Length: 582
Image (cartoon, rainbow, N blue to C red; front, side, top):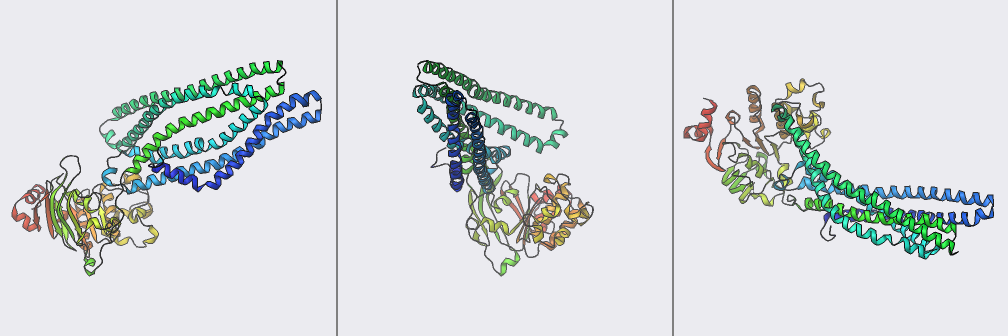
């Protein structure tokens, strides 16, 4: 992760700068705690070399009390320092998650739809937490306290016996060599493990989303087999990482600890026999040596953590690098004509999704303010693409879209969408109350009257039968409701925005004929003062349209009033005959 190019690094650095005062407080606490820790072994030496030989019970009791009290005070200070450090780590995590989530909300749709939802979920939760809480909070910031602790103990060791101190420091090159070798292997395993976790999250997410399809097709065994295969691959990846960590943290650490203690003890005995060191000094040294070795091992573990963090940061940086939607642009012009809706013009528009022939080819048409236009055509002919382009989810490859005679590329997407009410073919509802779904994204308290939209969408009988009326929670994605109920809620939500442009994509496909008839009459009243464009397979929905545009293979092949199109006996006539409307 390079500072000059990494957005992740910049967020981390900004949060650390923001908490400068917290870091200063932590350093002060660490310095005091370190001083107490460094002094404690000297109490041991004084106890063995002076207090015990003097047989002064009061002195012995005082020294023993000091050896107990100093670690207690040090532990309390260390706890306070850890709390301050965790505040910074959690702040980094929060900032990363917020930035990643907001970037996801603003990301261009063509990039967003190529991503796996399970991977995105892992990114904004686990990955951000590993960088903030785990690395910054538990690895990076503790290097401050470990540095003071290491320096203090090393100085004390050299102060009381330089030869033993040098012998202890022989462990440093050994640790360095092993950490270099392990770090390379760890980076590869971390990349594999990250991919494995993301794959599991994606599989679980897809399985839950498709549970009805799985059960309907008796696909439980296949789903269980896919999960079993992933679980086995995860187990193998986890075992490989655990084995490497176990070797370094447990096996190597234990070996080096025992080796250093044996060297210190052996050399210390010769120092004592040569009258160059006291027994108390050796005991103090046996306390200092493991501390120094432990600190060195913590530093190398932090280096391993850097490798893990680089993998996580690279994924976040790749996420931040995906371009957002344009956020600038002019507002829609306001004029007396605006009270009648908006004018739409597609001028030689071409667009392809990059997944076959779906899209539009040199498409041109106009919609006048206040006009009710129906769009029909075969599946995959490009009808929904028109809405994708009008809502700004995608930009045309060629041509120009004009809204109220202004190039759409020069208009603010926020302003465009604020003027729209859209009902998509796939209705999405939040796991909130019906009222909150109707008024989304505004606060329900800000919209005192939703009754007119409820009546317009023919929702009154449905709401009357709910146990808590408008306060009834619809459940995740509204799956507890029928398709027709979800569609009517979406229609009410769209018209409640009082839009200048109303876009309906197969908004009546799940309705029974009687409810569709009611909604069709409602659309007649709702069209007043706004432009309405309706995509429909069921021609009855657009029977009262001012004009119908027939789209096939991304082009306009017919357009006119319903009567005109029937007289032409073209594609619209074929649809009409197939639905046996005459």
